[in-house]
Length: 82
Image 1 (cartoon, one colour):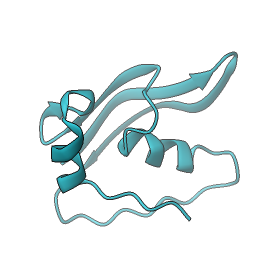
Image 2: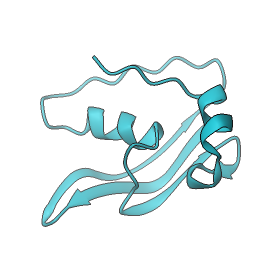
Image 3: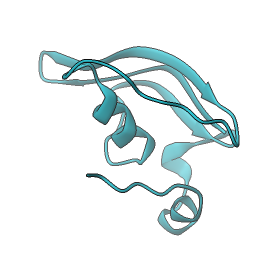
């Protein structure tokens, strides 16, 4: 399960993802819908560990995302950008 706690992402003076709390349970299907620039891609990149949150915490199965090894994370998470 992914869990985000007050997770946000900013670059310089611009906030790309405002603080969000979210839990995604195993087997649960989630759709991301929003206007251009609303943070959908940023959220996916945070979950794929391509970006590091500027605040808050992301966990996968109760373990902080940054503590997962590359191989073990790749066995749990697949990310295929367009």
